[in-house]
Length: 141
Image (tube, rainbow, N blue to C red; front, top):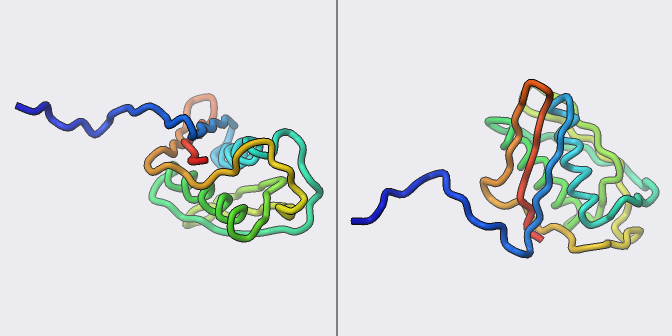
């Protein structure tokens, strides 16, 4: 007889994956810190000069879906539009969050490691604790 399938299982992170984590007093600042951690993973602490600004909105059924959507949009901006967020501000909206990124051209960036390709499915976590907010996600590189 086979054991029942468990919905909450653990699998090791692939050697090529990256786990980012962020903490902040508010949900919006925690989401912005998660973006900063994502960008810092391949950019390091140095930031190129700002050349433009991008805006986008994301929606989600819960805070973890918002985190996943924000990180997906940022990765898409890097890969498709060749824009790297240098600074990120996030504010709540009635349907989700609004994101404003000061960006630099990817041509002005010298990556220190692999550029992320996406957010792993069902890996994003955004949760409120008594002392603030925590975000984490597994990133495919």
